[in-house]
Image (tube, rainbow, N blue to C red; front, side, top):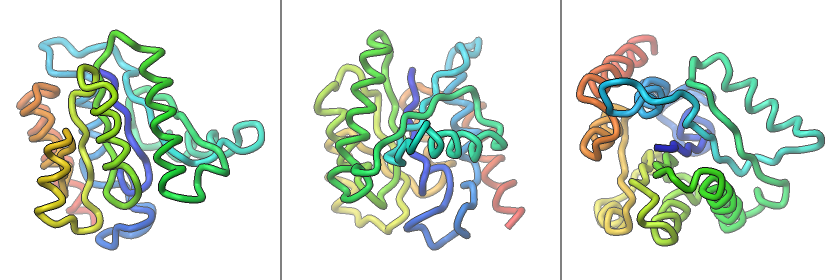
Length: 203
């Protein structure tokens, strides 16, 4: 399994989420990414199956991408890569979506033998990106998980679900979905839930 993850409002509260302070790492997200990287087998899988897919521009000499890497480094994440965007890609939601899909296709060409899980948020174009991923490669995409930071209504959640996109509000919820898909262990769900509670206790 390859894990593709957005950053803003997925790993950290940045743009649309008013529940947490800006820059706050979401309780449980790091533990969930660790569990997904290990997988659901009795023995943990190879480390390094995590890639952050973002529309953030790379900038001259990759400076912004390096800034992104530096910001992620202290979080205790498993080994990971970062695929960035370009300045023109941050103008509209459509251009953000297009760049993320390009990054997905790049990943799929690099690892054609793998399945994929995409984790994003409801604040920008991630649900549309995820649905397009499923449509393009249904045999490759295990599921799309969307962090609801905008209060998505039940009708929209149901519509996304029909496209292979599941929404969640906490990373305990996300862990339960991942376990239902056979992607993490029951013990992994418990560890994520404990991390969520610990993170909330520090607020």
